[in-house]
Length: 361
Ligand SMILES: C[S@@+](CC[C@H](N)C(=O)[O-])C[C@H]1O[C@@H](n2cnc3c(N)ncnc32)[C@H](O)[C@@H]1O
Image (cartoon, rainbow, N blue to C red; front, side):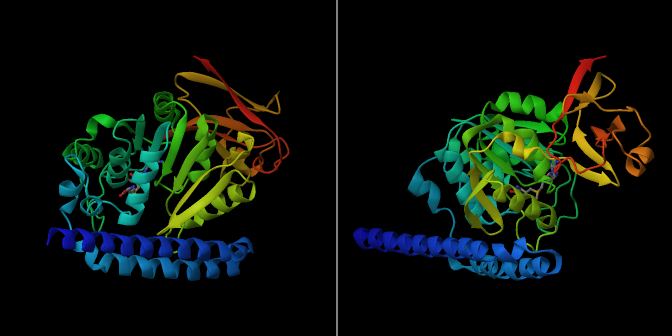
C-alpha cells in the first residue's frame, strides 16, 4: 500500500512538473514571438500588449482554480521541519504560487546579495529567504505605510505585517528591512553596502525599474539574476516597465530566461554598466536624478566633465527653458536633482555622461 502511494505521488509530481514546464515554455514563446509587435509604435503595440496579456491571465485563473492549489500541509512532512509551504504564503502575496516557487529556486541556486524591492507584507521575500536560508545577504526595501483598500490582502501597517509574516516562518533574522523609498540615497546606499555584490535583483514596486536598475547595476555581480514583476500589458505598471525592459533587452543589458505569469526572469548581459544609466523625465526640459539630502550635502552637476548651471534655478525655468539649469531639492519624500541638459537634448539618448559631485555642508 505504501509503495503504491509512493509511486502514485511520484507519478503525480512528474505530470505536474511536465505541465508546469510546458506552460512556462508556451508563455515564454508567446512573449518572444510577439516581441516584434511590441517593438512597433504606439497603437499596434498597445493592442498587441493587451492580446499578449490574455493567455497568461487565463492560465493564471485556471492555475488558481486547479485542485492541487487546495492541497496543503504535506510539505513539512515530506521536506522536514522549517519547510515553507508556498501555497500558504500565496494567501498573502500578490504573486502567483509558480512565481513564488521560481523566486525560491533562484534564491536557493545563486550566490551574492539579494536586493529585494517591494515585499509588501512579505510573500516574495519569504519565498526567497526560504530558498537561501541565510546563506546570502538579503536586503529588503519597503516604503511601508498602510493599504487598507487592497482587495485581497489589506494592511494597516505594511512593515509590521511584513515582520510578523517573516517571523511566522522563522525568517525574520535572515533579512534586513530598510523602510523608505528605494531611489532615496539615504535608503539605498546602506542597503547596497550591506548586500555586497548583488547576485539577485528583484523589483516589484512602483514600476520605476529603469531608475532602480540605473542605481543598482554598478553593484551587480557579472552573473546577477534579475527578476521584474508587472510585465503583463494588463497591469497598469507595465506601461512603464515594458518599454524599459524592451530597451534594455535591445541593448543587450538584460538577457531573458523565462516569463512566469507576468514576472520576467533573466540575467544581466555582458555590457558596459553605463548602458543602464537612466534619468526619469519630469516635464518639459526637466529630468530627475537621485541625490542626497540638500540640508546636509552640497552637490555640483557635471555634463561630460563640465559644470552645468545655473544651479538652484526655479523649477518652472528648468521645465520651460532648460539649457543646463538645475536644482537640488527635497521633493518630499525623496531628495533629487532636477536638471536640464546644456542643449535640451534627452540625457538618456545624447550619449553624454552626467555626474554628481557631493560635498558635506
Ligand atoms: C505590488 S506590491 C509587492 C507585492 C509583493 N512582492 C508580494 O509578493 O505580494 C508593491 C510594494 O512595493 C512598495 N513600493 C512601491 N514603490 C516603492 C519604492 N520606490 N520603494 C520601496 N517600496 C516601494 C509598496 O509599498 C508595496 O508594498
